[in-house]
Length: 175
Image 1 (cartoon, rainbow, N blue to C red):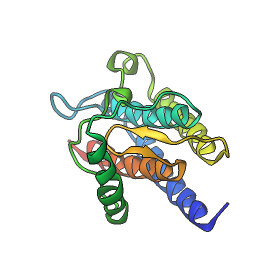
Image 2: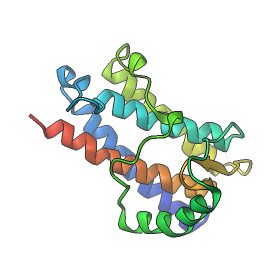
Image 3: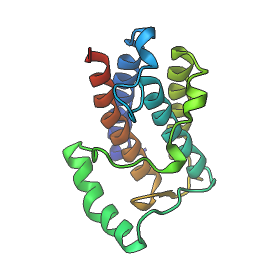
Image 4: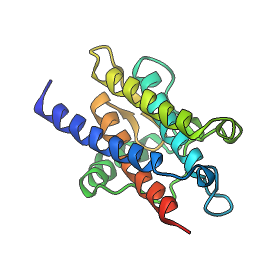
């Protein structure tokens, strides 16, 4: 494993650990409460993050990728220009619509306990990170960035999890 991969894995583990810590800190009576109409609850947000890892695992293992939502040239430009800047700034675009493939099932999330959703996230993240490191891992099609290498996908799920840790922390500290 290269130093680049090792550094990315350490960064990912730190980011995921922080998300899990914040998720476990929620009072059970606030876990399913949306902060505003049309916004996801902490439970739905956590299922969304888990679904992103599940998607990454399945796609890197040869499953279908996301449907490209932008023209191929725009995906290329985003991958070459916006993606590296996003990683460097450690900022993810706010209010970017989640692709359908990773939108949480709001009916399902209401049937799950807090521990079940958090455990699912931890399980899916572990499977995804393991899949990205396999020699057989394939490129992953992302809705906005197009075709990503397993390393790029690792960096993307790290940025995505970091982004949603901020939103989760805001929900935790809100009245």
